[in-house]
Length: 249
Image 1 (tube, one colour):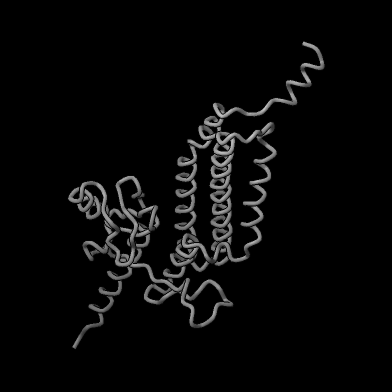
Image 2 (tube, one colour; image 1 turned 90 degrees about the vertical axis):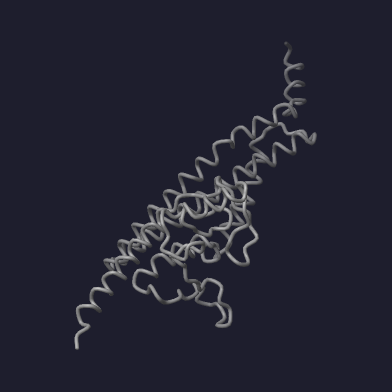
């Protein structure tokens, strides 16, 4: 092959629509990565709760930084998946792409700049708010957590939440809690599984105002909630025994 024909081949080369599916194959393991990140976040949350109980503020701050790092990683993995899938669609649509890394880096930079330029990216996250709520409840179990945004107007309550530790279906303490990865609501495993079984495997979320559908696959074991329930029950038992001890005529 002559140098001229080689140069022509290089000039005319582009990824073919038949090769586009290969990009999606790369993202097939994303769900496993997200699951590992979720487990890491639960581990960090429980560790932060332990340090908060011991009033070890430096360790709590370190756990806070670790949680944010996991959020950053989660965002990068999500963006990579979205980018590769978008590039696959562009190639299938007939766009001639010679070097996949060029548009990949361009799209990734747009995603990263958008994430990094948002100073409130953590405070507006439900996941981070829940993390801080778990820490707050160690010493303030019956108080609503203040907003994470110090500059927020007084009449805006977003970020001020109180998480129930009782199953909305049984009204009893959560038992073997599972949380929907779609709407983030938590239930006792047996109660929600029984409801799903009665409803043919899919049911609207029982929480008033939530319009998300719940299926078995979206329910994730929630180790953090297990820990919260354990602490709350121990606290209630201690308060009950203390009341009984001083309840004399």
